[in-house]
Length: 123
Image 1 (cartoon, rainbow, N blue to C red):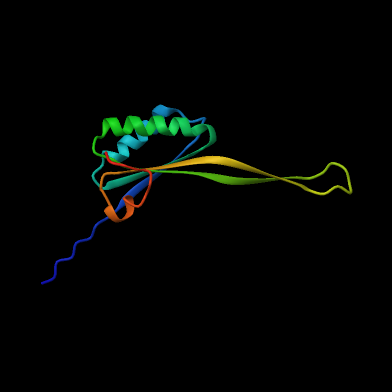
Image 2 (tube, rainbow, N blue to C red):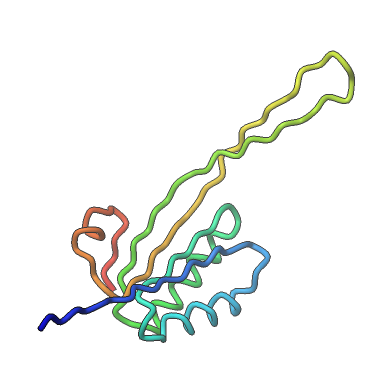
């Protein structure tokens, strides 16, 4: 006889904005992490929403002890094109750099994946 074990790995992704309410993000993240089948939650924020992301993650870590955290900081390039109002002028291209923060909270410790990150924090 053969015994097969199937592991269902479920994770949720949250994209935080500066307009969203912190209580809404907290309620959603905590309700997902309290389920047994959810092992990871991914958060992502850009610009002004980064402060809110850090606050949400710190509260979640306090309410659910033992979570492992991986943090990634980066930038995104955003290109905007402007059409001239007068004929004969060239199209203007403006490139903006936007700061971005990604945080992964996990119930499980994946040694192979998590130890290679500089932003790993043990829960």
